[in-house]
Image (cartoon, rainbow, N blue to C red; front, side, top):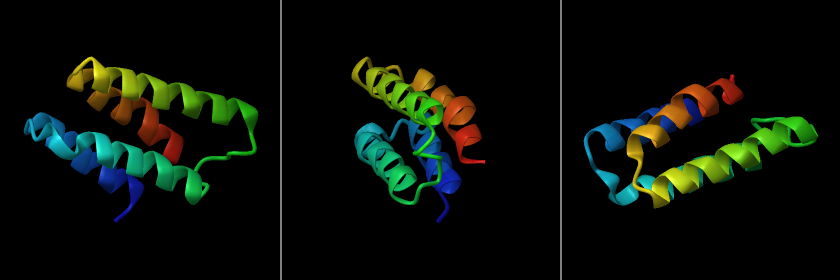
Length: 82
């Protein structure tokens, strides 16, 4: 399963209000993104954007703002992976 497919599954879980596994799945996607170097981790600007996105996603999770989380994944995370 590709990272984009995993993000799609997370978004589906959010919209189906199956929140229980969302946090773990997001962390898994972030970790896989770094491990597979899907983003250019040697580029400080890209790495900074990715770190900022991770923080915003974790903040959205803490605030239970799942719509924001789904939007961050769709409009910020997916474009980073392409």
